[in-house]
Every structure is written in C-alpha cells, then in structure tokens.
Image (cartoon, rainbow, N blue to C red; front, side, top):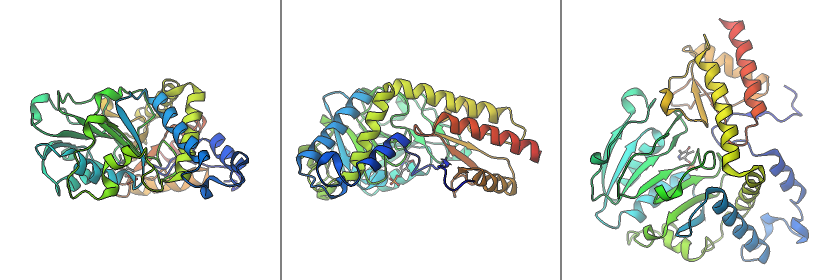
Length: 363
Ligand SMILES: *Cc1c(COP(=O)(O)O)cnc(C)c1O
C-alpha cells in the first residue's frame, strides 16, 4: 500500500468522513471564516458558533424532515450515555419499559434500564447469535409500558429493522447510532431517536437526540442535571459547553448530504453499494453471510469464510492492499465491512474485485 494515499476504511466506527468535508475543515482550521480563530478555540456563546449550531440543527431537520414538535439536541457521552438517559427520562409513568434484544448494544441498554425500573424483554434473538430480527406483535408489549426500545441497526451482527414493530400507542425509542441518515425514515413513528456521531455523522464526541416534546420533562428526580433532556432542550443544547468542533464538522456533513440531494439520493447509493456486496457474497464459494436475508443491514455487512486462519489471511492481505478494518467485532470474529454514507461506491467496487481475486487464489 502506498502510505501517501488515503485508504478505504471499513471500520464500524469511527469511520470515514467525506473527503470534501475534511478538506474544507483543513482549509479553515486556523482561521474560521475570517474570525481570526479556529472553531476549536471559539466561545460556544459567540455569534459565529451560534450560527454553526443553528445551521447544523436546521440542516438536520431538513435532511430528516423532523417535525416542529420534536427537539434536536447535541449532547456528549456517545450512544452509551443515551442508554441511561433514555431510562432515566422516559420511565416517569408506570416505570415499565419493554425491550427487544437484538445484540450487544440493545443488551447494554437493557442492563442499564434495569437499574431504574421494571423492564421486560419482549423478544431476543440471542438463540441464533443475533443473526435475525425477532418478529413481535402488538400483543407482546405491555399496554401500560412507558416505552418500547429497539436498536434499529445492529452494528456488530449486520441486522437492521427493515420493518418497525407495531407498538400501537406505546412510544417507540430507537438507537440509530449506525444507520441514521442512511435511508429515509418517518420520524413521526418514533417518540425518540438517538445516535452517536462517529458512524454516519461526524467525529466522535457529539451525540444527537431527537425527542418528541411530550417525552421531555418526566425525568426521575435523581437524574443528574447533565442527563435530563429537559435541561438541554430549554437551553438549545447550550446548558454547558457542547462538543463545539464535532458539531461544526457534523454540520458540514449535513450540508454535504443536502448538496448531494438529501437522504433520498444517498439512500440510492447505499442500497446499490450493499446490494453489490451481498450479491457477490451470496454467489461466492469462499465468503458467506450468516444474516437472514430480510433483516440485512445496508451499513454493516457481516461475513465469514468459516475458517479463522483464512479470515485472518484475508484481513491481513486486504490491509496491505489498502482496505482496512475488515475484521469482525472482537466478540464474534469473522469479517465485517462497514459501508457507511462516506464510503465511496468505488471503495465497495474495489473491495469486491479484491475479494474475487482472493477467492480465486485461496479456494
Ligand atoms: C457504536 C454503537 C453504540 C455505542 O456508541 P458509543 O458512542 O461508543 O457509546 C451504541 N449503539 C450502537 C447501535 C452502536 O453502533
């Protein structure tokens, strides 16, 4: 690999950013729009930063078609902190919540929620190593539950909710850390959505929460001030110092997506990228995808050769050729190609070419 070139990074996160965004950031790094300072040095109460955060919010609202009765919050602490915030803020009614366990991230969210209320596991796909999304019906949920929780895209296992569970009147809360902005969604089907930035939004450090107004203001009295959504909602995400630089870069990614034609346009590319890769794998004699076809993620493509030594050989040779981070999650092994919005289609095409060649040489 030529070390002077940029690699195709298939990491599950942090992951690639659009090169145009990186170049723009580099160009104005030391002197942001003639302010004489970098965004890294700028007061979060300055007029310049006020415009940065307001533009980021309004561009995200445009991209996702977020209705007026939802707050958009820029927080810190990653997806993990949201596991606690969701439970602390949304169980103000019966203190009951229903969880569907589709992998490690959902399980972590569940374990956290158990500290604060009466939590029921409605369905669990651990029996088949989380290779599918369990089917549930409205009757499976407790009608008086304060919310139902799902992890919409299971980063580690390569599954995705291609159809949402019908929760009736019960508010639906979704972790979209690894699929936000990848496909058009109807925000009104959710009471709350959250996502860490480092997969499909921007650099690690900012976490986005999109919350319907009626869900805010019911936090448990013991909730730490930073973890109360109401505190952030009332101060437009400026209760304390927000992750300014990460918000600024995320804002650039939002503009970049709008310039591309919005989510509809990026969804088309994403579907094409995923289809090509799955097609190749499903016809391969060496690589296999263990995930149920109807539940496959278009962001995280999990595959195996069935042989650990071969998997390792593939990861090593791919790295040499400029395709990095193709190793599966440390908990399940195998291989995984994360192909988020910023992975160019060319990266997927070249990876497939490389996989073909590897297959010919090793079968
Ligand atoms: C990465 C990830 C998380 C954890 O995010 P952190 O920001 O590292 O806390 C949670 N949920 C999903 C679905 C993820 O992919």
